[in-house]
Length: 550
Image 1: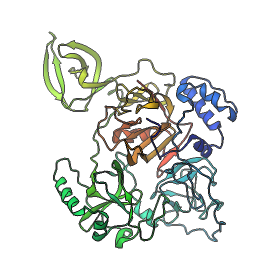
Image 2: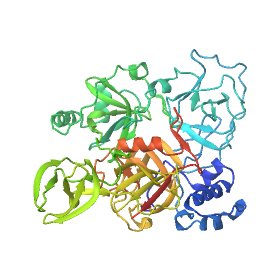
Image 3: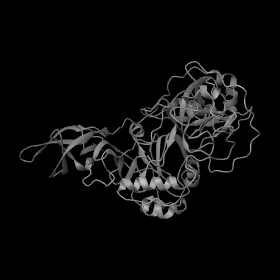
Image 4: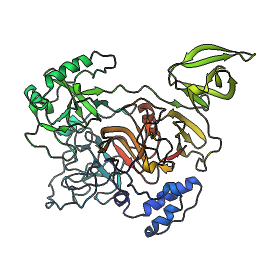
């Protein structure tokens, strides 16, 4: 993964630590926690002596040249609302006008008091002050229970509220107590956490404009000069077998009627007459909150509240692949078939083979562990007594010598780059097994290639979805709402991929790609947990171990 890669989902470790703990002791404690799981003892030096402590944990835990991805605080006015995680760097906060306290508390709504996010990132802090530890954030449209009374109005116009299950949120530009706020109403669809969180679409060429309001037909012709020929081509494309039709359009909400300007949730100002927010990059993707029809044409509403003409996109067909939840009855070893039709044999007492009905593609097959060499090559015995060719499957075996951190009950993930497999363990017990797509440069040095970093790490930040993009002219992309992202080191993360269905083959820029169904399962299983209604959570101490090796 080259240094020029830009992951706007995260910021420098220095900003992270400043926002989390105020000094270096948090990293020392995190390092100590991981060292303890690895079977080492690391003394706790004072904060100013961080480097010797990290060095004692070995090369996989030393400070790297590239910044850790995280949710830092970019430029802006925190009194108006929480900072955005999508900006590039932190900067001093500009002074604000004097805070004027409101004389009365808001009326308590029916069903109990709630706080509603109206920003792309609405920060949840451990205490009602901007310098406090960051616990996570909410996404626009999230509704969470809150305390009835304001905790304090310090540096927050609308007041700080305690929310469930923990933390405080400032009611301002990024949060409100009004369920009927336009940004909240447009964003009220919550992610589905059992598979792909939303409907997704990828760009076609030429790329679509991003509209700030529902455009009239005249405005569309003005912005999209090739509109007539494009629509003819789109109608032809809709007849092809690979075409995925969008769902039925939803009723047009009042916020989209009469060409009304869409509200901004990412802090960017939108002019009262603005029509276009920009054009998508060649390799772009979005999650859609809803699809609507206007003038016979379909539009998708992105999570950043922009309208995209769906006929200039390719609606994503979700991958149906998923791994296997393991048990005493269905455990390791097993194999996942790779060929479209994997040959299956019956072995007779004389060593002869007869062909049986084949296995399907990417089918999980329990193995006994027995092998047999025949003219067809190495065969592996399945638990139903039949045999498969080893060169047509990916075997997943149980660890013979467990790492020292694999103590009873400790959750950890084992990722093999050569086999392209992942196994989730609780102590010595495997509980889930699947295929992955890691860095396309295999086991090369990750510093100068698109290879996945090797070592032992902790998951420290989890997002239900986040943007990943690159400005590299040779490999430019802008993938919004990448699902189930779990960062464990620098820009490296486990996450779902909605833009390919080639799991079991290396092809990423260095992250560990998972099928959406697998990524959803792992996201719910690993720590830190993301509370209900939240979009992200973080912890430098309590994350699940990720062990990556050849």
